[in-house]
Length: 212
Image 1 (cartoon, one colour):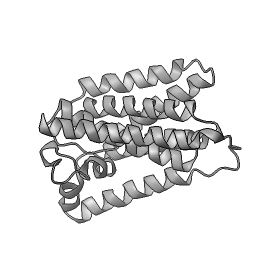
Image 2 (image 1 turned 135 degrees about the vertical axis):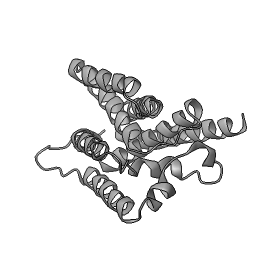
Image 3 (image 1 turned 180 degrees about the horizontal axis):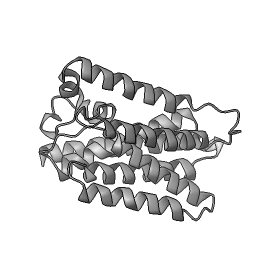
């Protein structure tokens, strides 16, 4: 974890991720759906095109402008806050691992459903912020209310992948716990090793599901 003066820090990683999301969305429209089909995640393709488990994070539904607007706004609000707390490199690691965790959950819980969107990664930011605030002694009441409302929406609104939400939330919280527990400078190697272990566990879960 890093201490930064909020007024002097520019959350460049958050802005970069937003830029990628926006560029991919434009490419989705311009390609007539080719980009969407190439980057979305559909579990049956996992064995031959595993990169889709990550690329799907940057793809959004062209049938609903609300989808990208909501995810983009959520990424901006949560991303700028979390990035200021943990730094750019850790933030990108957190975002990608949470996104991967969302795809792994889809593979296990909804193996016939194609998914798009950054929601899994965004729920990972929710989980991370909860863990980080708890480490500072925060009460988290407002965050828990917002998180609960968003989780409930995933279960009652058609077309939303609650599986990705749960997977991203769990992995995001786990990654943040690792970062909090190894935040001292002399624990850097231990932190890297544990984060690699989290990534390895996600790969192992993916492999296990493919051969189960």
